[in-house]
Length: 255
Image 1 (cartoon, rainbow, N blue to C red):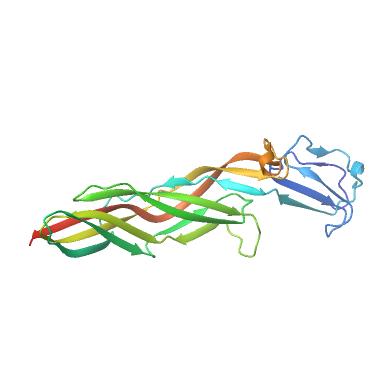
Image 2 (image 1 turned 90 degrees about the horizontal axis):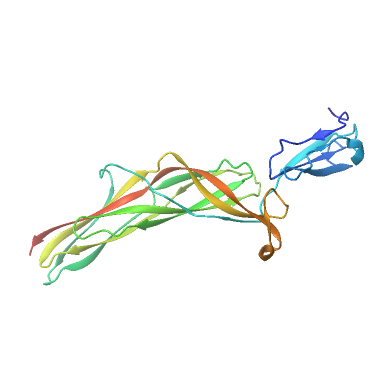
């Protein structure tokens, strides 16, 4: 088709994409770069109108990436139907007072939690995620607490030699749970941390994105340089293991 194209149509070009035509094989010379995935213009019936009739020798297409982006954090929970195989930490001590005593049992681990996050967004060149844990309040005695995780994701659009649309990360574990030691007892307080698997699922959130170009359906945002803002769906796949719940047990014998 080199030097033999007299018209061009781009009705299937996706939003956030542009293309350009050149009369030189190395992408130089006379060009036409008004091929965009948005707007009403979807063809050039006569390339002679832009001085490219029967001379197009090369083309390129590019992504239109946001100049600013805020991806909403979202919540996930791992699951494990068994209390077996958890991580444990314990305290052996005495309460020689006449009143119950609050104690804290801690557990730290840097190898047991690993999560992979992946996006299928072809515009993305890199993805990073952070994970924040929230435990529900337990009760005295045998205390059980469920863990919920908040995931915050950031995208990169800069292409490098190590471009990847996924990230595997080991998540440090730091748990501190309280229990009550009975008065006048020797006791062992045991913290059990149950690691669960993330369910095989696609997770959804939203992103606010600002563009310099008037892509489909935006609103000009005067508070952000007049950039074009719109809200877009974000889909992510997560796999791996995270804490799903904790148990605290007290075994006591009288002094």
